Length: 612
Ligand SMILES: [Zn+2]
Image (cartoon, rainbow, N blue to C red):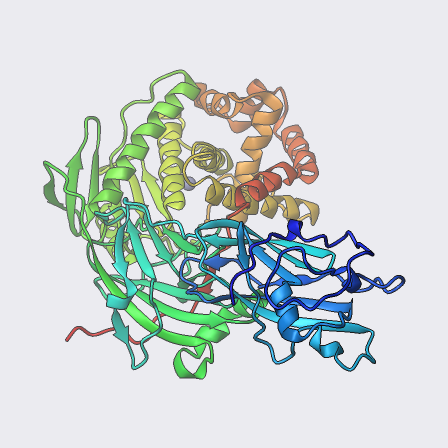
């Protein structure tokens, strides 16, 4: 049957002409049929609008045919024409953009007109499933006119953004299939950026071509290092999952790109594997919040599980020029910069060491600006990759293990101001934001040490408080802004809540005992914030300087910089912290979180792939 040539506007749909009679028309002849009779009967104005639906946006990998559904209810019957004649008269008009499409009913129900054949029915209905041609990428208006009713809908045929050239790409159909089931991964590409990935630096992983709708494919991605262990994954507040290392769920958004940034600061060089488990979901998102349970049944037990594949790639070690080997409890590599050196064990990627000394040098410049004076030389930095290496190094320099026995948590770093070798000691964490905070924190201990050489017993709340405060402040709006702010809010709320419940320790009690209690860190940070807000930005370091002067006490130092006695100072602080509100920071965090989906975690790889 030829396509009708008229457009809907050519048909006098809404212009009944009483002089025209209903004449059976053997061929499609424009404007020859009076369709006024199929207009709505007065008083029956319910559900008469044709309704178009297809349910989704078509994406690049949805192969035609593409169907749309048109429904109409309570249309008056059109009598007097055979169904062929009705077909030919194009009573239902469909256009996609500028193209007329002849609807051909696919559903079991016939056209509306036929369902009124017995003439006892005054109203009819229709359900048509209509195939539309492949469309160019972009938005398309689909118009359906029935009688004098018109419905319009915009459909989108979207091209998926390509993975940029800064990524190295892998076709998942070329991946190693794990187990017996190859998941359907047609069109799915994996991208890793940068192309030459460096151990110890951030990696971005993208998957392109996962389906989004009507059913979503989610990928549970795990990174496994050359040692056969999962890469540590940082939580949203930067804390490392220590008990169980998990993978990350990536689900595509409307752009059908799923992406994940892995901080990678502790990733060692060598051959890495990305395990990708694919799951389909027809269910609501809430099901996937329970992905942990899901993943626990990995494989056939999970009805949504589609199979797993593996991609291997190389992480290169950054080549540092002019390194030396030294031995301090364990073999260390020494890399010397202009003012100081970084020493690192074999389990620390060279890039992490290089980036850390660069961060330390930046901290020195930042603090010089704040203090208005140069603070001695930049200390050396000693870095270890795990607690065993840390113990060996610490035994050699301090004669005890890395984490002191009385400490409440694993120690992230420390500053050694006396004896040899002096410097900053750091255990590389999994999140870069935590590493940068630790470097600045320990550097502030160095600054305080230099400022109070003759009177070294600075109260811990002031020493740790300035270290905590600047650890956050000097990384506040850097690359890891969101991570830093989340961690800060969590820390601030800790002592605010303790103050409200009356559980905040007295300053006296945290003057010299330090067991690494998070509440003590939080409280000390808050004291420094109170000082800065109330007595000006220079007041914390001014107090350190006053403390140094002629063997002053903290009482005298505070009186000199704040005009308050120790007791008045503490009373003022306790009032301030009770009234403190994290609202501004919270809003700031919500702003940064917009568009970023919280990372979900899925089950760890249990059976590792063994190379043949
Ligand atoms: Zn400290």
